[in-house]
Each structure stands twice: as structure tokens, then as C-alpha cells.
Image (cartoon, rainbow, N blue to C red; front, top):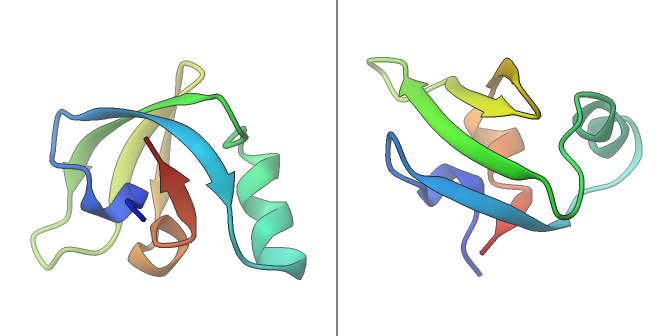
Amino acid sequence: MKTLKDIPIGGTATIVRLHGEGPVKRRIMDMGITKGAEVTVRKVAPIGDPLEVTVRGFELSLRKAEAALIEVA
């Protein structure tokens, strides 16, 4: 399973599935990260956490733990 945290800087992927439950999954979905959306990794902080991504025209920051819950293709 390939997750969003595995995508290199500048890479683009399509969201296949969201893992996790409850408020974490709801928060991710509320940010526009849903099945079929295209995501581009823009930057990664020097220590590797958080990631900055672009989804649906918006720039978002995600923790590495959250990115690990997002399965991509």
C-alpha cells in the first residue's frame, strides 16, 4: 500500500482510500482530501514533519501520521 507520506516532493498522486476512524478521518475529509482527489506534495519540513500539499487548489499542511492514513495511487 502506497501512502501520501511516500510521495516525493513535486510528486502527484490520486487518493484511493482514507484509513483511520472518527475525528481524524473526518478532519482529513473536511480539508477536501477525499477519494479521487489529486494531491501534489509541495514541501516537506526539514525534520520531515509536516508535509505541505496542494489539493483542490488549496495548500494544506498535514502531519506525517495523517499522511500515512491516506492511500494513493
